[in-house]
Image (cartoon, rainbow, N blue to C red):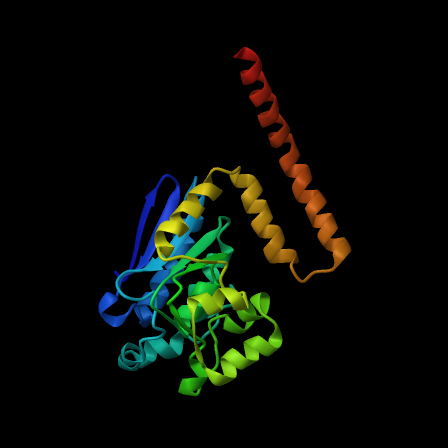
Length: 254
């Protein structure tokens, strides 16, 4: 297994575990990432997910040597499934499909496929000296693990094109300045877990609804977004009012 999962206090701690390869993704790891996300989606009571990498890197990209040793698997991985993604894309986008927030804790190399995996999370905490790179054009390729979509959601088109066309390396500190990450930390995993615990204290139905609204309505029109907000709120309001009444009752009893 190259993807390890532990769940404690309703928070899933997901680790890429190929430290000798700087967590570069093999075809098997690609499959494991998607399977892990699908399994967590069915986990009752889950509140948040933190994904990180063991060893000296978050993920140094694709393990092209491993892919070359499994040409049939690599070829089959390009075929789309009924979800509208191929296995490479699903390894990233499956985390977006989770109803709970996903936080990526980033250190060391965050290259190519690793950067795309990081952008598949909802939130990112990066070490200041992490090494980021949209590396695909340096290998004569394009970002094809949902990277075009996720880059466009976070930065302007000129920045996305420049980072992709040049394959230039930039630091975690620069990633925050560009808008690719939300926080910089000398201890990204610890701070990501703190953030996950903070989120876990909120009403899970409200967090799930907020994530769904942002992901489904971010580029939608105003009126349809307002309608979606009203619909989500109408479903949440009875539970929120019931919680408020219970809180008031407990205070009165005191």
